[in-house]
Length: 408
Image (cartoon, rainbow, N blue to C red; front, side, top):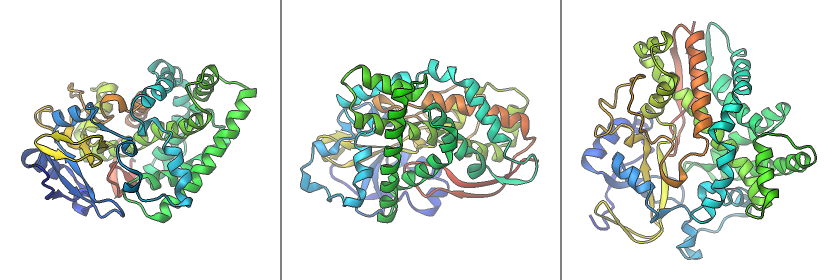
């Protein structure tokens, strides 16, 4: 299939956005690697990899990376408009978009921040924030679980752990919302410009907070970052501030999407929800299965850092490869009866958090938060009935912008 670029699917088709899993099943059987076409401005398309074994191997292959600018000449890129530079300048410092050796250096900073022991120590505060969030939703009658609960809760938890004062949480929510919209492949110049303005504001906010905390140290995530910077020369001030913003995203997006997707799945599978309410399942396995069944991140993108032959396809240097996490997690070669939600499933090798060096840094926080949230939901809500739902238009992630439920 050298050089063949016949389109095998279009990830922005409405039917695919609503339910991608039949398409994934077809691709795994007929086109384990194939060309996906998108109408996104300035974006031609990408190679899509659908089988679990190939996705897992590709994510660990150092021929695929994030810093494509290092292997292509400057003229290969469209100049960044001045209004967009604060956003791109910020994310250029994120370890998410770095390859070794810079990635390893920055990952060492994240390791203690999101370490399981550190996150476990925060359980009482996380529980208090969850209880506070539940106090805002009605015991009976419809409400939007996304806007009224999961989105503000997830941002509030990571904001709190990052040392953001509670009074500033609503401000941070607004910044994060607009920056998130500007980072997807499905975006407009207006969205990018708005996200860039908010990125500059959020970086400036953390700059002021860091200066304050240097005079009044605290033992929290932000304190760990500041200590890492001040104890050595391996983290610049610019990287410190960019990391603060990254950890807001790493700590909240997967959690918020997981809660929405999980509730949607449980509402469609009342027998499994009954098992959860009856205490017949383990919290760890529940979260693992919800992550596998409808993964918040559907595709992990990389770039070919050299000309690569992969699965019989000649991929040119600089081309984009989308590794299908959502497809891999429904691969029948790995998961028995993969389209069935089974909260007691013991096969937990899902790729919802990726694989290789870019495995999600906030996975421990997302798992613990979700485990606590779903345990509380099971105690509080006798049933979950979907009144209305609206899917997020996105290639990168699968989630809901609106989920009206009745739990009375």
